Structures are given as C-alpha cells and as structure tokens.
Picture (tube, helix red, strand yellow):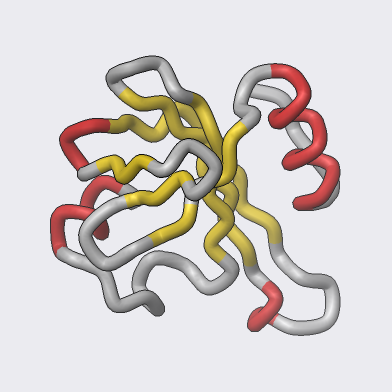
Length: 97
C-alpha cells in the first residue's frame, strides 16, 4: 500500500488511478451523489484505509477509505472525525472499523 504525506495528495492520486467517485456517509449507507446510488454495508467493502493526523491539533485527524462495491464502483470516503463521531448505524460502524 502506498504511503501519502497529506490527505489531498492521497485523494488526488487515488481518484486519478482507481477510485474516481466520492461517497458521502449517511446513517444507514454510503451515497454517491454523482451516480445517484446508495450502498448498504453488505454492498461494499473497504479496500484500503489511510489515516492522517493534523500537525497542530489532534482534532485535525482524518480517515480516508478506498471503497469498492459489489458492482465494481470504486470511490473514496473522507471522514474528518472518525466513525465514532458520526450518527451511523451499528452495521455501518462495523463496516468502517
């Protein structure tokens, strides 16, 4: 797995090379607005996880998930606070651990 120095570097590289779509975290699913689809926990897998820590504060932590669906749709989910800070279902929380 490739290492990245910054979140923006990782997003740019992964979008160009393999994960072109953006996912948004919803309580029960992931949403891809550009494709107008929702992926339930059983419909996707987390391929890679990248963690980034802010230089000035631990509040600046971010997690980048590289995700692929059963239908081979690949995209990225950025979680600025970690899955424990979000109001999401237990199934989504387990999937994103």
